[in-house]
Image (spheres, helix red, strand yellow):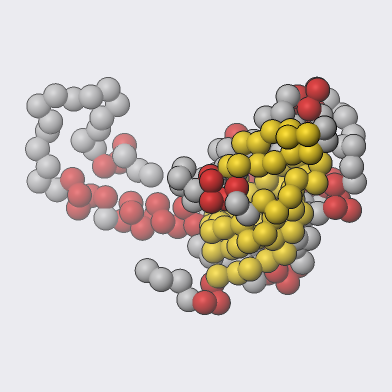
Length: 224
């Protein structure tokens, strides 16, 4: 199904409240402007161990990317990115209350999103949204949207893959609005529709001759 033009958004960070208010679960976003990366290393170093960021993140941008950019230092203090892909967002749900509240983050870009409960509680309370990258084959395409690497911090402490990257983006996308500021989850909505007809898929299905580990014949055990 082709999206209507009004459901495709070209946004520039820092993201405004009107930008956030116009996004609904299932919309598509193309993102420009400054973002900072944060995943396991940065979250622990900054939110658990209490190390203050070496740059004013709140003043820089309100968009965070859960990514380990495939890039390197081409000259002292100069970095390039060849591929950009996100990591699984559900792993970082525990850090979202402080990330959104303390640093004013309004948009988190990850992979596959988080639970609907996190959106309805944390994201809705802070007026924030969660975007998901699309599939595994777009890393090089996403990488082309990195206009420049502004700086990379905490390389010695965390290693280059876990470091804090500051990047300037130009039309990074497509990105899926997985969780919107109203607490809705696109994947939860899609799974609910699938589950409505799951019984029909099992009707008349004969038991397998060989059963693989974890394979089920009962629809109630297969719910998405």
